Length: 273
Image (cartoon, rainbow, N blue to C red; front, side, top):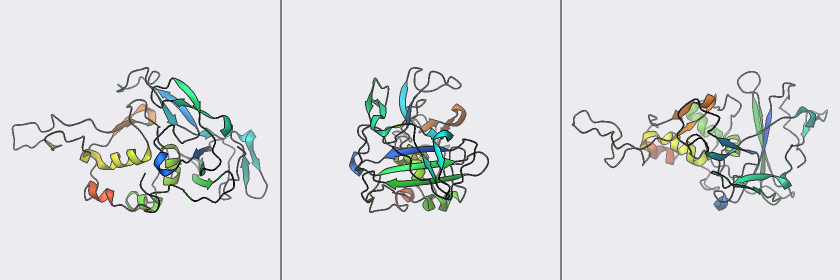
């Protein structure tokens, strides 16, 4: 695929710290089937991690979305405030692990020029200028009709503030998050899905997840009884992130209860992920 122009406001430094990704977006009711819609992927396993007691065995492997670090030799300054970048991966020959968990083969992703695609540009992170931009387009030149943009970044910022960011600071929009946190992308250490719709709802639900309280329906121990109400608590949603550190959210309390999360503003015309 020929690289497309980057937004004019992105000034590309010579550090090579910029990353890009592409994302083929499937129709709304097909996104969970077949393959991860994120165009860049890698096999992630537990064998070489070893720093903490992971849940899954050492030979456990999953497909996990990733991104391409900019090759400055493929980045052309057009001289008018815009740039052209050519991805290393040719979409027509892109392959992916199958199945997504403990894959045994690789299959073609399939470059469908009639579907909406998204290009993501991340710049910066832990230090220096930070920026992120996405561009939706249909390769055959048709108008973009379906975007699958369900939640606005501004909605997240109402609680998380203007510093809303992830992965070191260069992921700052929901449109960018869902480019990689797509169906069939997993955390190898825990075996949990990190698809955006599942991950975000489980994080915010905390111990209100139906699986957490156990058969007695109580997550916390009641000091007025002799029974330990925590004995039947379920396993929390946990994933391994930066520096192979475990993150779980069983103590999270969403203001007003989980029912408030369900009615947070979603774009009704797009449906829910």
